[in-house]
Length: 476
Ligand SMILES: *[C@@H]1O[C@H](CO)[C@@H](O)[C@H](O)[C@H]1NC(C)=O
Ligand SMILES: [Zn+2]
Image (cartoon, rainbow, N blue to C red):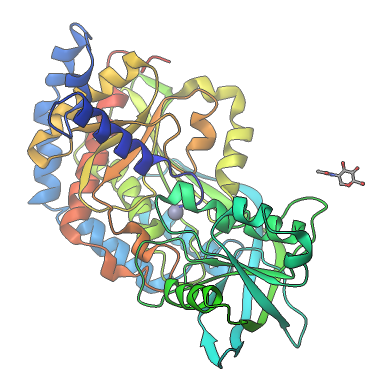
């Protein structure tokens, strides 16, 4: 997942609202507001048997553990799949073959230009007040330091306001360390994504950020960042919570902290592909219900959680439906986005290329915040659309996945399309630990769980099927 996470805020607002209204927390949306969808409620209820068939097939039938097993084979074979790399392209070819082996052959790829940022040697050494190695991960597209590195004193600020309040002559020639305390991802991540530009504007020679995570065992978390036009590009990296807090304590004591930063990298342009897999609708094939995840990952970790799991439940949807001979009225399109991590590049290219047909996207879904136990959906759309989705979610009470969270801009990649007015949703799941592993070496298969992936795959498949098969389009 890249930048767009408003969910935690939304969930908190959601819970606070219920506390204030004196009802139990976690009530369902359908009970919250008056939803009257008339006879459509009966139509939706009639899908109960199909939902049960899909669940049986996945929880205790031939598809049991399949999502996990296929994800593990994929992750073990390819490992990290950074934007622009050959291994990413090989992993795309592999997914196409895996899908063709299921006799699903409506597959196209769409080429686009993507950045390739290759991390080289990285090292930070604290020189004063004592010698210490500082763990780091350079941030995406960071420029290199000179060969001998950058040696400078550190100033520590918690946020952009503190930096702005610091005189330019104090910042000039220094390394700025941003050490915001993690509240929510969306609130904290700006210090990573814009820190280098803000620090350089004030004359800093490099910038560091306390990793954007609530938990650490001395693990740095990388992520994307953006330089800005006419502002000097300075090297920028994330350091661990532990080292950041150490430097903060020293700084607060008035000790002079001096670091030597060496970071080397390379930036190239490459070609990659979005992958589109269609299970053609039997009545309205031009109308789409899209399920999606991104196939690229960071260069650290294995991209099992971010976003292997999301990609594989989206792969499972047409496969399960094909195997069960369930062909909905509208087309189910699975998309594996490319180059999400370096700035939603694949999704932006898709939105541009398909802008003239966006009225055909009935609903768009994405899983890119973990595939832990599903709890429901985070839904963007008008009141009527949300009422319909809330009614569909009632069919998932048996697996505790009936919660609708209102979010006007859910997801990472799909937000690009939802922001043009298309209704859609991202997977709401029990992902309290997501940011523990996010963008680190710890993003491995050990984060994934076969049962949770089965729950996610069945939920994702059944929701997409019902929306694609309803007698009406999701209103917008
Ligand atoms: C950058 O500098 C150029 C030349 O001075 C100017 O034309 C342009 O508007 C500047 N861009 C921004 C974003 O300030
Ligand atoms: Zn992701």
